[in-house]
Image 1: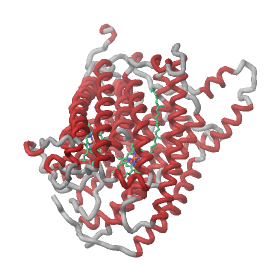
Image 2: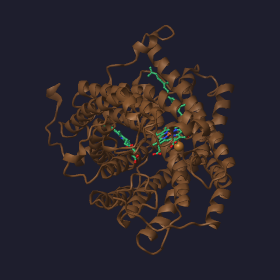
Image 3: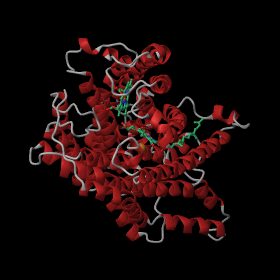
Image 4: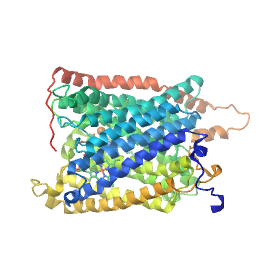
Length: 579
Ligand code: HAS
Ligand code: HEM
Ligand code: CU
């Protein structure tokens, strides 16, 4: 084995010569991971706070609990995700279509994003933007923060525009062909993000930046919150769909199987494109000044947007079952043992999927106007989103790095065992965290609270000993998981190179449809009648611009009257600095 390793000093240019897009992808990935490392480092301190243990008094580098929480939310949920997704959903479609992106534009996207994040970081680290990751007015921070946030989004849109352009050109050259699956899913995700990011862009550019620069005297908090959640809900699908791209398009191969149904995958993504955005009011059930009728309508649409996830659960579940049965598994559940449980690429993503089942169930509770009243603004909500974005997304991305980093750098994963331990500990850590936080929430303990020093909570804390202990322990387990994950990642990055022939491939998966096609006897019609019907359906689903237009129409209907009402009755208030 060691004899085949060339010296460490194989120059980068040789590795990236054939596919220079590898380098920009690697930059996106690694920069995202570095920000995640900083963001995650603060998480355990917050978990200890939710166990009633105060470590903040002895920390020289954080001025307050809320400065830490702002860094944690912004770096993990906004910055890490955006970098990782931009890299992944640029690279995969380019490789699948076999085209090279415009490298200047790709690097421009990277640098716009990075300048933006550094500006925002200066503001938050300097304690001038302790606004939490939702930056609701009237809390007012430094203009650097808002401009930085805008640049982060603009950077991602530059990358999205690249991918959509590449696809449009491909489609023009292949009008009768169906877009390859991974490209289709990536383009649908980017188009969804175009529609979804409008709210945030309008809020930041027209309300918050001029206000923070002193050009306007006030901002209407309700209007700002509504624009924020217009983007704030679909952003969760911007975090989730890249994981679905991997679950549908890549994981079946890692599991030794095939995609159960391409058509189902395409349908799920079209439903997300249509339904992700006009549901943001479910974050504002408790806000005054928004008609109950609109809240109930958006609640119903939220239930509809659950459907593509249910489709995904059954469809991806079937793919894995096919893989396990092909590996000799049998019985109604015995096949599960035959999945590749020694492969960290698979394990991290499978554990992420399992975690997403209770994550999604909790989401359905939140989406119900009546039930949300019991959990809104309690510790239940961070419980919910650490098993969605914090695990379904993050642990999937961990699994992706286990093949993608070796693929991009041509350096093998430093330690499979360590990667497996990191994945299992993240899974168990977040499981404990979720039980603890959901339970604390049901007792009534609020989120975003410096709990270790809080007063006025009555006997709540006395009733929450067990969930608080679980939350505290979870923080320790997650610390170990994170240390192992970053160790294996950076050891890989700085490890020795292998030859081009040993490069880790991209696990693009076959589908049952492809397999049937290939199984046709020689001389038979290339497509069976059933195959022709599937091809026709997929061509209809390929009209992503039409679905984008419909998505915009639905947004106008679902948000138009509410936003017009707010614009006609503005209630601007001056800014506050509470920290
Ligand atoms: Fe949520 C609040 C409703 C999904 C993230 N959510 C949040 C917040 C975040 C967040 C960050 O309606 C907090 C924002 C804040 O700071 O205030 N959420 C939902 C609903 C869904 C949902 C209905 N959320 C997500 C995802 C997120 C995320 C995804 C990030 C990635 N959420 C809400 C609501 C609120 C909310 C309200 C506001 C609450 C409040 O009061 O403030 C749905 O999309 C969920 C559908 C998912 C499923 C699960 C499908 C399962 C799958 C896995 C299959 C597994 C298999 C097992 C096959 C139905 C696909 C394989 C087996 C093996 C053996 C390997
Ligand atoms: C908030 C712990 C990783 C995103 C919180 C809170 C805790 C926590 C206890 C609640 C704080 C409060 O409401 O006062 C942890 C631990 C982690 C971890 C122990 C792992 C070591 C992550 C990851 C993500 C994430 C990976 C996303 C990718 C968030 C967000 C908030 C939050 C968005 C909300 C901030 C806010 O309310 O403003 N975290 N977290 N966390 N966490 Fe994490
Ligand atoms: Cu939502």
